[in-house]
Image (cartoon, rainbow, N blue to C red; front, side, top):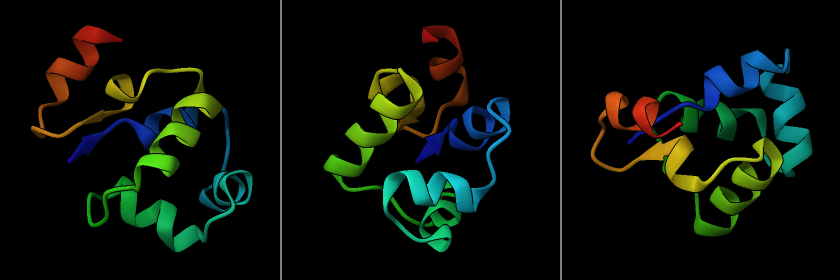
Length: 73
């Protein structure tokens, strides 16, 4: 699943470890989500959306289409 997590994290100057701490997960979990090896649980997706003040759909695209996210953001 395509996501904008790395870009959103970068805009805030946060490391993966910083984001992981804010979410209560491991740095490895953040990395796995960013590279598309792991899809977050619904509660984690909601926490990410709240943390970045975005809708889940603005962060994740289940169809793997980066353009649809950019056009909605």
